[in-house]
Amino acid sequence: MTLVVAYRSMGRIVVLSDTMISHRDETLRNAIPGRLKSVVVNHWLTVAYSGLSTQALDAIRWVARESRLTTDEVVEHLVGASKHYNPDLDFLVCSHEAPSKPRLLKVSNGHIHEGANFYWIGNAEAAQLLSALEMPTVHGESGGEFFSLEERQLSRRFHFLVDRGASPEIGGLVVEGLASAHGHCYQDHSGSRIDKITIPDPLAPAIREAMNRGGMNGHYKYSVMSSHERGVAVVGTYFEQAQHGYIHAPLLHDDPERVYSTDQTQFSNLLRLKSRECRAQNHVR
Image (cartoon, rainbow, N blue to C red):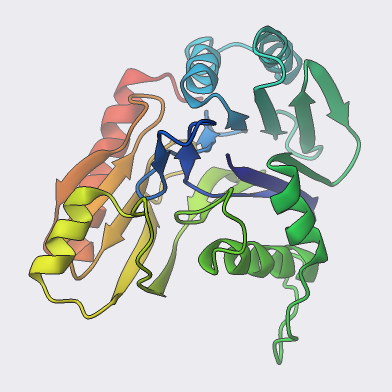
């Protein structure tokens, strides 16, 4: 399962999602690298999903190919997909088609919801845990000229929920999408984990093998990195000690590409190359 949340404030929308994908009969549970759940379609449109990953990505790619669609036409197409796979496919839509009037919509069970500043899709129990989670106050934490205190607090709670493994229905790494009138993109962040032996292993076999060879003593660092271009669906997850990473480009491929990289600088260059490829194959407006 998964959890995706979106919050609108001060003219922008932040989208928070995990990377874990799983099958309902538990024959598949892929947390890292997993799949990207929040897809930047172009400069002004982001679509996130929960449920049937392959079918969701097919629907989003169709939207990306139809470069002249309006927000309402995008939503109409996603409603059709949601109805077809009801109740196994939901979407969140973030739009700055009109830059001064950002729209946040939820498509669930074939129905459209709009008007609230906060929506979630995915696992209901995980959403309830997020809602009830109380975090200690951080000294000096505040909003800024372009972002609200509520946005920062939501982001911190979501990271805590995923990083601590508070719900078995969500996992992997957190991906932060940012939708604003300046363009839709992803936000970089880094962290570390104390390794826990679980079955199935949340790490991809290649990453685990590289970590074992390096004698990493039960912990690892990671970075979630963007291509630093707005309007392009490219995100990387890099594991410093293992010198391996994954590049997510969901408008090109369902699953991420595994790459070897000696450091973050080299990995960042690979992200830029993938971003150019994505731009070349998709009409970015």
